[in-house]
Image 1 (cartoon, rainbow, N blue to C red):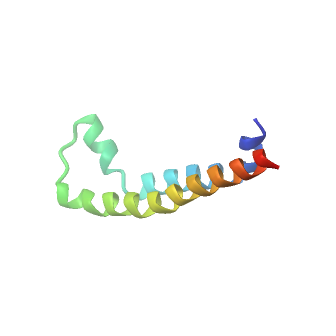
Image 2: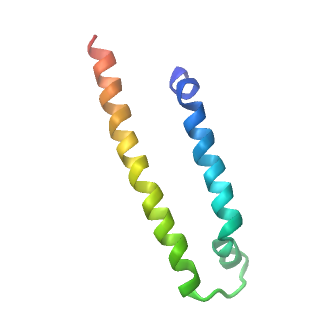
Image 3: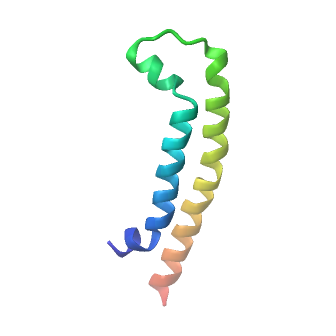
Amino acid sequence: MSFFKKNLPYVALIVALWFFVSGLYPFPYFMAIGIPVDMAIVQPVLIATTVMTIPFIFMLFAWKKRSERLRSE
């Protein structure tokens, strides 16, 4: 539980960015409700998702290393 308390600002930032990007690029939601969308429009969304995922993967590795280091002490 303390993991979530310590990282709550980061989780809140990711959620806020998710809602912000959803407002800018609502095309996946259009596709989900059946409105036809040109796939060329969705390309920036996929690129932004990939770019935002890369730092998240590095954070996961950093959290794992920090957790292992704290356990060993």
